[in-house]
Amino acid sequence: MKLKLNKSNIDKIKYSKEKPVFYYDVDLIGFGIKASATRIVYFVEDQINGRTIRKNIAPVGTLTPDEARKQAKVLLGEMAKGVDVVAVAKKEKIKSVTLSEAYEEFKRVKQLRASTITGYNTAI
Image (cartoon, rainbow, N blue to C red; front, side, top):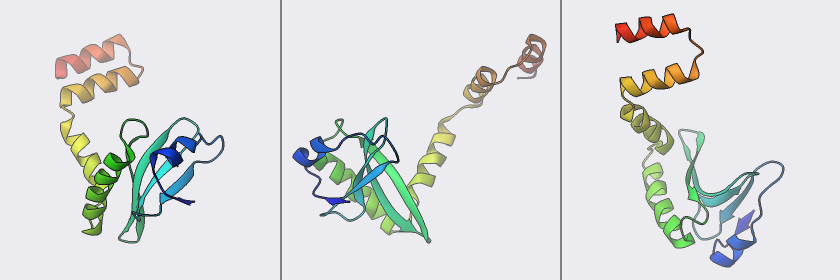
């Protein structure tokens, strides 16, 4: 659904009980709002190498529509150059995780016996 994304129109957007609902800005192509059952977020969307790439910017309420539009212009500019901003964000997140953090997360998620954890701790 196309909509002028300004404060008054955004305030009228309700959470979607069923599937997510996408509201696209009439002024900036590729910028919009996604309303799901749990949250409403600003997003950008574009085609890169034949695939639709959608990246969330921020939850509605944390940024004004103009601030979100500025961030969207930057992201859409990168996407126009062929940069997959979602893949770049994933790579940055992976780079920021240390081995020790990954190991702690692994121990937290997996159900391991005490002897296994002891063996792992001595190896690391």
